Image 1: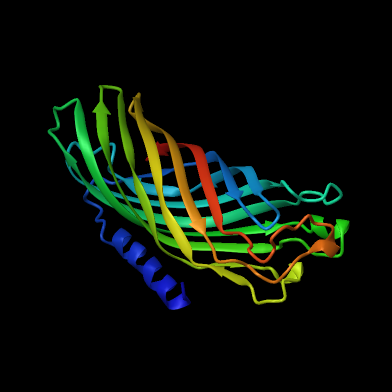
Image 2: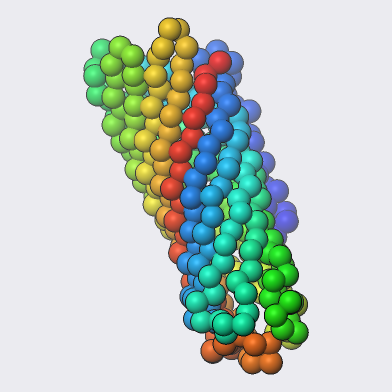
Amino acid sequence: MNKSLSTLCLGAVLSCAAGVSADEALHPALSPGVNLSQWDVPSAWGGESEVGPRFTVGPYWENFLTQGNGHLRALDGRLFRESLDYDLRRQADRVPAPRGRMTGTGIEAVGGYQLGYVADRVRYDLVLGVGYDRVRQAWDRGLQSAGRVGGFEDELHPVFYTRIGAGPVFETEQWRGRLHMGLKYPLDLDDELDLTSLMFGQDPAHMSQYHSGSFVNFSNLFLLRGNEFRLDFYYDRYRLSSPGLGGGGLDASGLDCLDCGTGSTQSNVEIFGIEMGVNF
């Protein structure tokens, strides 16, 4: 995705936020959280798994759990940092698995409509949203110490996506909850992987296909002594693919590199998370 399109997409998300007026009972909140993410990559080395905890924090404004019925609006921002352990399943024994970290930012604007009446114990939401995520992965140079090749150093994942979902909303005197399920479809992707230190003899590869994924979100709002406490559980799953990286083998490095000309073709990503928040 070129820079002009990235700017346009991000501007569209921000304009959605600007359209939310102060008289629509939106509730601001701050939500720290933690999740566990796993990236499975069938790569030139036969398989790579990246697993680690991710810590998130960010503000959000929404009326999803306070609106009796009618129009729904939400704006969610987030910052996160994650430590990753890598398992190159078919590497030579003398090559240590590298360690890395992931940092990123994101923003998402969601609108929808709640079906039902205020007196109903169960109502139903229909939601549609857009978002922009920018994730950067960085590795240490663990591979370089074992051979004559520098390891992966940097990988960028910017993506603009849309999501659509639906689900029931439950309500009692002290608790409100909603269960949203649906699809997340990235509109474009422009990943840039720094491969120069791996001597592939080519410019950095560009991954250009991001397949649709699914999500489940279970949000809870507890009303205690006039205060509103929030607890969210969520699951995201998606898949991205890339063209072959090309460039030949890396036998001299000590890596058990089979079919290096093909390179990574598909990554499966799963994220389990929990967030807490307090409405102001």
